[in-house]
Image (cartoon, rainbow, N blue to C red; front, side, top):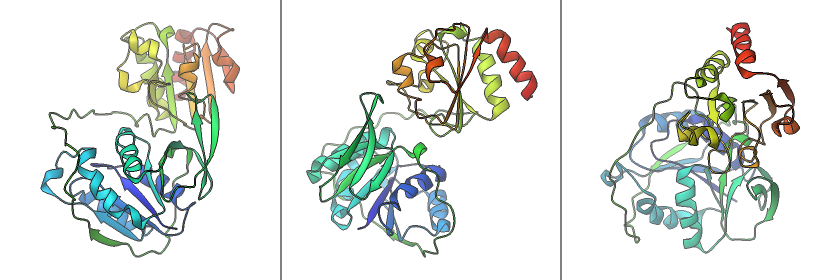
Length: 311
């Protein structure tokens, strides 16, 4: 067995890759990586220093300055026969590319793998996280996206001398969408999808101005800020920070839920958190049912005290 880990274009997060590699080495002892997109010197250097992957493939072509999945699909398919498993960290890129790869290979694709029982059996959430499904895979090639927050980053030097090889870009057989514009978001805090501490606010926070309390607590703890859909729809916070069924799925070590009731759609996005602390003045709020610790009180009284003690 041999595994290929796909690295999304313009990626700079070596921790996410190390988590994906952690999953890959549970499948097979030999793992290669394919860096999609134009030349990424920083990521190439980081992967070479890991001494973990056997071969790092790099696709270099002037057409890939702003790559889309359709440009890279045929290149992935051309080399898929060399591997029993194709893995990629769950992201918007994996949601776009992996189903296309699976369809071309005529195999199934499994999303958001959270546990690998053996090379052909995995566990992943279904029904918006309300149930877990164990899947036995009998396809010639397994195509999985990995919920990397559920895997500890692989550490240590495996003593593998990584070879850097160029992989030519294959001519795409599908129509290639026209690239119009890329909007780069800047983050003052850890990325929500990768943070080990998340402080999330709900509609009970009351306003965008009041979310400053959430930001202050997040900065004290070195955490990321999240929100419910209700808070996003109310205009308190931008939608890329929404946690839940229609937002991001997170699994931090610590999740602090502030002023949110605990709707099932929100719970679906954070139920894998290791420790949950709820702060709500309503003693009957559903969030208390799944919280490890709860503060029944007014968030406008509780949060300033927490910030003061932690500052």
